[in-house]
Image (cartoon, rainbow, N blue to C red; front, side):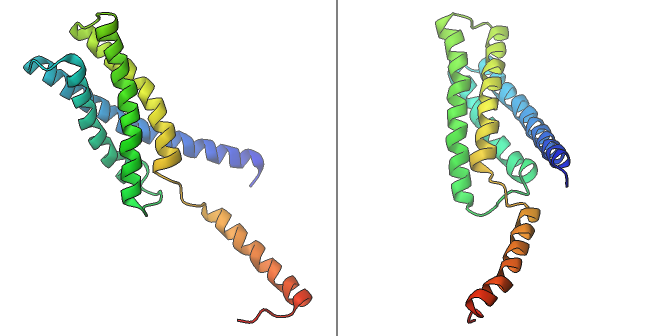
Length: 172
């Protein structure tokens, strides 16, 4: 495959991954906003605490979507490690998301329903960039490409006869 073709393939795979991540994230956004607004409208829970509750529910929803759809072909060994890292990076994302809402609410006094939703979405957007990078890099690890494995095996097969001639047959 040419260098240009390989780049095109990698970009196509990345575009599909971004689209799937975005689809799961869009559903998570709906869950997050719906839960937050439900709590804001039906209870006396403070704005930021209710927003954090919505975030936690969305994080649980998103894990299922990411594991079983977006990254279903990725490495499935070490589920406990995967879940621990997912929760760790999700918590960092929640701090980013909630920090924006906290700053808007308590730093600037912007806490009308519309303002709360706008800053909730701004926080989610910033946190999403972090989550995409961290999930694909650390949580849902890519399996080695089949082509790379086959190339390595062919390389090793080619090296064996030369080694046998120079050093004699390898005992088995």
